[in-house]
Image (tube, rainbow, N blue to C red; front, side, top):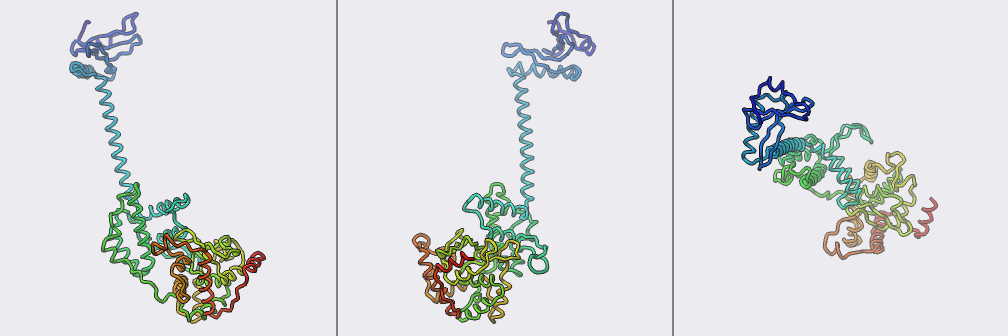
Length: 453
């Protein structure tokens, strides 16, 4: 195989021999370096060598892209590889793969850094709605961790921005207790930050501050347990001593209930209210011991006048069935059926009794009684039940309290008739103490009256 020194002129003049598909010109300087030219005039630097006794050819590149010294250097490199028993093609493929892997690792690292930066910029205000929707979705799927509508509303209220016109009354709504933390990054929710927030909120609204802290604490536990947000919230931020020192004390309102001697003026004032729906609601609230929103959301479908029962949408257990005692049945049967709600309103947005508190306060003023909240009427039910020696387990079951002992949790299944016996006894006692003259009508007459309405 004849060899000659490669020059630019010699390479330019070299052509494919007639009658052949390709011709070769070999370099005398770099072993294995050749120039291949095809019948179409395409020229390529190549390397030819032997590996394990087999001849191999590898393309280097076009003379228009490779200068002669560069091609010679590449040929020498390939010669070193073949002399050491390595296949240049495999070495090149490995190098490409390594470069590809290195690039992929670099891109993955950059993506991880960007994702972490994005995670660390997440604020409480951004993630709070996501948290609520996750729990709302769990409810739609029928999961045990799904929240009630009231619990969802509590979460929305504590984070509301405020500044919107009030639906009732004049002025603008106030920001929720957690609104001041909306723009705080999760990574910055340290125990110091939370303690400072809690101290400020406790001064003006301790009850709401305590509720908001409990909701925030559960939220932070959810973040820690969620793979997507784990590690963002400082560990133990809600459990440090500086935070515990700022938590408002949960002091029960010892005077937020009706006493036995106050039943007469209270019933008189409430029964004389112009708004008969509010009047019936307030009396039923006292006589059933239900939570205010449980009773306000009562639907006609939940009332069974035939078997005298009420199905209460319980915020704790989901729902519970309690007796429909004679006087409460009398009150409900007389109410207008405007829509699906028992305690309805012709003017509220959702057709439901909106806010009975102002009316109750006016009735208290007329009766000359100190302020008693709507929740205080529920407290009154529990305390007044002791006058008829109503068993504590029955009181708890009617009011929807969680069982407080193992026996209550696992071995007490009281039929509705047993609850009705005690509940009716308490209702009758309250009415007698209040001087309310009421003769229970037979159940059939109540059903007939409801059907007629």
